[in-house]
Image 1 (tube, rainbow, N blue to C red):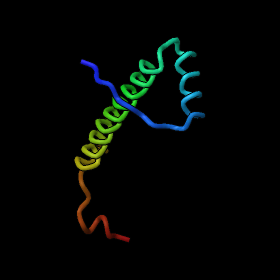
Image 2: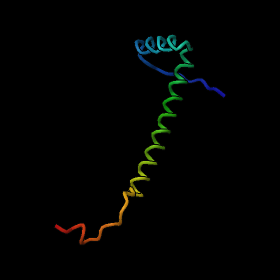
Image 3: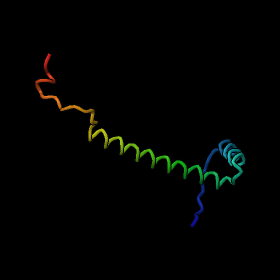
Image 4: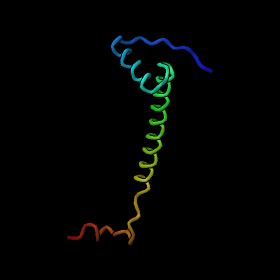
Length: 76
């Protein structure tokens, strides 16, 4: 189900947006909808990648070998 939304923007910006929609062979409404959907998907992918990266940092990286003892770490 679609709903109507009213936006207020500068006329110069509106003119540029209309040109973008024409270049994409879409109505202004369809073009804005596609841009917003793309933004939402991009944000979701970013959040997912961030979550995976933080999990890897939390788990640590396995580099092989055995863990060093405290004495080995601080030996000169």
